[in-house]
Image (tube, rainbow, N blue to C red; front, top):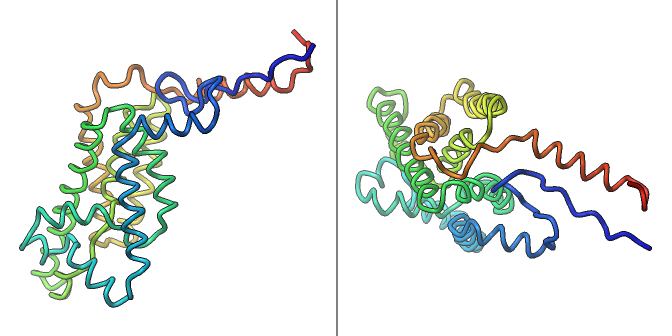
Amino acid sequence: MSLPPPAPPACVNRGMRLLPPGVRPVRAVLGYVRSAPGTYLWLAALFVTTIAIHHMSPEFETDFLRQRSTNIHELSTNPRRVLIASAFWIDGGTWWSYAVLYSVFHAQAERWLGTWRWLAVAFGTHVTATFISEGALLWAIRHDYAPHTAVNTLDVGVSYALAGVVAVLTYRIAPPYRYLYLLVVLVLYGAPLVGGRTFTDLGHFASVLIGLAFYPLTRGQGGPPWNPADGVRATAGWLRRRRAPAGAD
């Protein structure tokens, strides 16, 4: 008598499961997407705009993106429009890389915090970090550390919002792993600031600090913090069951 195949592991506990036992992979993926509607609607919009960019000539693309850029000139004329528009275009990188990053970070934050709290973190970080970085650039221009033409610097993309969400997920992880995660985040975003010291490096590091400042919004959300050790133990147990001979106790 053959035994049914063992169920896949619960890789992470409570609300962090990616593939619950007994659920087929396609259904699990669809369920995961439905659990983070804001993340995947945003990602779908980025897919459309990325295709549009690929059909533009290089000259037209630069001018087109500059009009949707959160540079000093556009912020001084129509800040509301460019703050929203700039979050729907990718300047550099591929859509697939953002699909992975959105699924790993944005989707988890939305599932944990709920759509509106997640959106508050993402958009709040995007706006605040933009004003910090562009304010620093304006100061540099006024003190002759940067040319006046920098007021039209191209600055679009979703990386500030992503950095803020990456940072706020610190509070989703149980100690002591939380502190290791935070150290990695600070090093990843702090090292470019020390080495390059560009206004975008400043914006990314500011995004991390802003994301951490959203701690009050995370209190009481999503149950107990996620403990990575639980996922490791569950995976190890599943592997042992897979290796056990048929009919073994």
